[in-house]
Image (tube, rainbow, N blue to C red):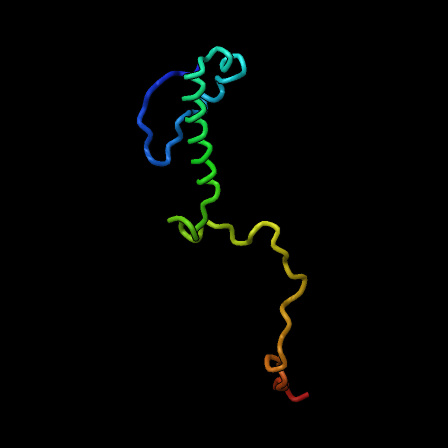
Length: 100
């Protein structure tokens, strides 16, 4: 089923391929020795940690450019009206008219 191969992990590279994961099921796991299951568990744990680290990256905690972040955060309420103007910001002057 899943290929037993030894390869050096490069930074940011998953240890198990999609193909490896698709081949694993209860029957596959039942046929493994305790030592093989332990090695597989370690690889799965390392992949899970890497995946969560990638998922939680933001421009604030990584080298991602600021534009890679969504412009509006999910579930951010959007105002139903323009912001309130202060008294000082009111247009109190009259506009010139065309002789009327």
